[in-house]
Image (cartoon, rainbow, N blue to C red; front, side, top):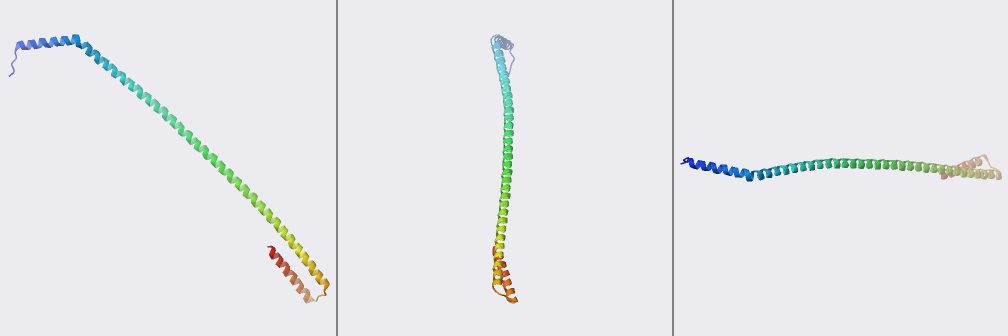
Amino acid sequence: MFEADPGLIIWTWICFITLVGLLAKFAYKPIVAMIESRAISIKEELESSEKARQDAEALLVQYQSQLDEGRAEVQKMIEEGRSVGEKLKREIVDKAAEESKELVKKAQEEIEREKKKALMELQEQVAELSVQVASKMISETLQQKDHEKLIENALAQVKEDYAKTQ
């Protein structure tokens, strides 16, 4: 099958060493330079991507901070609005209560005036009736029975007039 021929082995080694020598002289430096330049470019790209990642993280932190500040400001505005609303509500309720008290006071004063007016009218009517009763009594000579009847009628008239004013 396979026989080892010493001449073939020597020529194979000579060709191999010649090829390695030619590659070392002409191709080794450009290959190494290309590999080194590729390694440098990969390293630069890694550094660039790391810097970009760090910049992105810094921006993320900055944006998060701004977002938190914005949320805090919005919350503060909401609280201020709520407190202003509560203040206005208290002012409106207080003003309404004050106006209500004023209206009740005025109504009570009006009722009191009307009550006094009605009492004065009633007193005038009683005085008028008394004068009428007295004039009737004087004009006629009354018997005891007629006198009692006249007084009862006058009292009934006063009660009726008083009930009308109520």
